[in-house]
Structures are given as C-alpha cells and as structure tokens.
Image 1 (cartoon, rainbow, N blue to C red):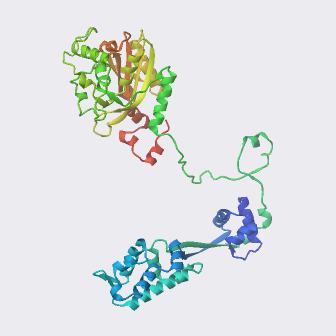
Image 2: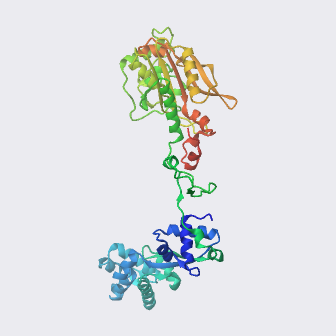
Image 3: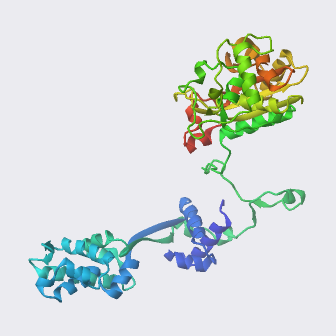
Length: 497
C-alpha cells in the first residue's frame, strides 16, 4: 500500500475507534503531532484514496477590537456625548459649549458626525433633535451590542445584522474571525484496512553521498515522489539581464588582456567633442541632440588643450591636415554636458598616458536627446575600447573585434568601409544573425587631429558599440524598452546570460 508514515499513523489511530468522528484536537493528541499541517496533509491523502471522509462546518465569531474594548470600559463615544447633551439646558447645547467641555477635539468631531447620523442636527450652532427617545434607544441598543460581544465573543449568526454592519464600518470596534471546524470519519474502505498492513516503516527521503557510499541503501524503502506534481517556480533573486551581459562582456575583455577604465557622466564639450575633431558646427552638438547642463554651466579646461584644439580645428596645426577652416570658440568648449559617448574616457586616458602602451576598455552609460521608440532611448550603455601602442594597425583591430564577438557567441563577423569624423580608416562591424548581417558598431584608427594634441605619436585602434543593441540580440527582443520595464514576470522569463 502506497502510504507514507504520517498516513499510516493517522489511519491506525482512527482504526482504534473506527466509528468515531475525529476532530483536530483528538488527532493531534493521538498521533503526538504538534502541527496541524500533518493532520491536514495525511487526512487529505487518505481522503483522495477513499479511506476517510472530511466534513467541514464554517462559522464566524465576532469579538471586540481595541476601540471596542475602550468603549466598553469608558462608554461608547456617542453615548458619552449624548449623555452630556441631555445633562445641560437645551439653550446651552451649542458647539461652543462642546469645544469648552472635557471632550478632546479628536473625539468631538467624529462624535458630532455620529449624532448627525442619528437625527441630531445643528442649527445656528445649537444641537437640536425632534425625537430624543429614538436617539436614546438606538444608543442603548449599540451599547448593549458591545456588552454582549465582550462576553468572550459571539457567533455572528446570533447577532443583529444591521448592528454588525454598523460597527464593521467603524475602525477598531469589532473584528470578525472566520472559523472552519473539520472532522475526519473512516469510510467502509478505511475500516476494512488491516492494521498489520499499515505498520510504520523507515523511509529514506533524501539520497546523500554518505548513503550511497555505505550499504544502508540496499533493501531500504524510499519515499515515493511524484515527478509530475506541480511545483512552484523559483522566484529567487537574479541579476538584471543587462547587468549580466555587462559582466559577461567585462569578463571577455579581461580575458583578452584589456584593462577597464571609467569616467564621469558630466564632461565638457571640449573633451566630449572638440578632442575628437568633431566640428563645432556639427548637428550632433545642438541642444536637439545633446543634454547641456545649467549647473554646472561650464567646466574649466587646461589652456594647453584649448589652444591645441583651436589650431587643429582652424588650420590642422602640424598634423598635415587643413582643419575645418572655421573659427573655434573656446567658450563653446567649456560648456558642460552629459557625455554622449564613452570615447571621452579613452581620449582622456591617452592624454594622461601619452607614452604608455595600453589596451583598455570601458562600459558605461551615455546620454543623447533621442525620441523613445522601439530602437532608441535617451539613456543607454556603450562599450568602448582602444589599442594604443607603436605597432597598432587595422588588421590588429579587426582580429581583436572578431575574437571578441566569437567569445560572445557570434563567430561570423565582417567589416565594411565607413566614415566617422575622428577615425581614418573607418569600418563598420557586422555579425551574422539568423541569416542576416546586422551592424553593431563602428571602429577605426584615430586621426592625427585627435591623437597628436593628446601628446602621442602612436596609432590608436578604437571601437565602440551600443550595448542595448547587443542585448536585444542575445535576449531575442524586438523592443529596446522591454529591457527597462518593471515587469518582473517578463524579466524572470528572459534567458540567463
């Protein structure tokens, strides 16, 4: 017989008095259990097998709440207020007299409202009523109701429905408790079970290494498990998918020998734009595309860099370039903004380490004045990296990118010629995704107009890409906004990265 020890114990107890109607207390006492969950579980299974019938009687008990206990001791609020009104002359039954009385303000206001519900009105500041006896009768019935309930509670069905509704609407006066009384009765099938067939046996519920390494498992009885039984879905904490992707990318770059750098969100237009040889007339520098700040409105920049950028932009300085041939506004360079890319971190790193070879990367938030839609957000993440060393070259850059994407799970990579203001040559990087080539970022070698003002003569391989676009591929999303919606159910269903 497929019974657990709890079911065996409960059935043997009930067979000791097969015609009895067993309640919870008797079953707990007879089995020695202290938790009613054992009775409910074993009894439920015996009921499913047809050995036990379960009867239920539901009832509701009414008892006093904290305010009700106070009202029984001190008197119901409307009763005390009504007694005070009846104790003084009719012409003195005024709101002014009430405010001057011993009643607290937190009592007088609600009390007046309750009396109005009983037919008491206030005319020109004086309390009046057409039928004092009716008010007195209703208050007496309410007081009697509370006194009745105070006698260790009452069955809901024995009380006046209207008074129950009234006191239920008032906070803390009464509380209603739902009770269910169950009884367990043996069926004919249960009575026919032989006690010799339901002796308790030792069941093994967990298979451990220690058990398998010994001989104790031979001939042992194992607790049955229903592998098809419904089980709750684990809802423990897990990293946000974006954070998991960031950690994965970080691990890949560190494995490839790169070091991580960081930078501030707030930057000057000089370091964010001018250092990258982006002309001051470029449309990306307008307020329609960039978040400029009012506090701070400007950020100081070393005069050395302002002079160098001005010469490079106006005439190319000594880089071999002719520059943009336009005037350069140094005050424009000092404007404070939220960085529009993480490349600002890499150029500042080069400026601080012009003679030190380095391979660095950064992952950070950037900000642009974008209209929110399925592929754009005003705040997103960008991945940036550079190789700064004497022999850096384009094949080195392409092989690095192919290695990175292969480690991320995308071995099919191609590069195409492209144009960016601050790299030459420039390429766009595509990966093969479900039979289609998708562009994920740009790369190239920094122009001399960028590197020489920073103090280095070495070539710099650089690349950047939007992290959210990569996340959409990894998580199979068609709307970038799904990454940041507070939908826990959707986030739980996203694959682990």
